[in-house]
Image (tube, rainbow, N blue to C red; front, side, top):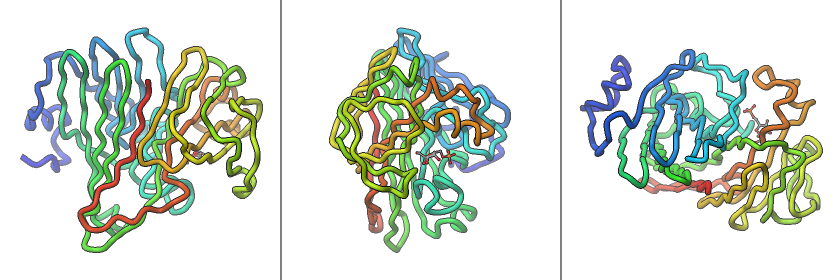
Length: 295
Ligand code: TA6
């Protein structure tokens, strides 16, 4: 059976496609406003994924500490981008097209596969072109997001060109991390120079480790693993990203957003593996992998 039928409920879709050895009780479905979520319950971690955007909203390993930040004022109307978690920006990053950060994060994805064993749970979600996406991006494509949930979180976005013509794209895994206090947070492993997006992409010098005391929107070249020192420490690595985008809107930026409260900036930090400086060209049948590993 195809996973195309909009009228089927998600749980019916999954039962109709039992491709994995899913342990009973290891997942559940919920509804946040108009958005369906798939919640994975595994002895190693709990994880919640919105089917809108295949957006991971929560990742909480055994120690009970939430690693992702989700705004209390996030909108779950089924069409607005959800503020927090890990939005997938594709087929463009930022305002290079409309809607901002592409349509992947506001499209409904299908659950393709669920598997679990003692070590980990794995969820695969997919999105392909439709009449609506063709109006914004006139190509046939397939996106497949594989999420491996364990003590660590492994996220792999596979972008495949299903069209007869090549296409280019930019994008990101726009991760919002929970930090206990951004002013006490350090990010280690970034270069000493970056592009400052709030000043027309001007190149600037910054201190390492990077610390936070004002609004920033910086783009660093990806030079390998990052370490985030906050209430809990994390190691981040990515494949396929040419950049790490680091963003915090601070109080003044948050005030301009209806889905972020004035003090929220204290407890969040976006660290995003991005395809930003390059626009890879994918030939017919080619697949590009953009991944993020959170340890
Ligand atoms: O990744 C940083 C950024 O591109 C910022 O410039 C900022 O605007 C942010 O993403 C949020 O964008 P959004 O469209 O989700 O409001």
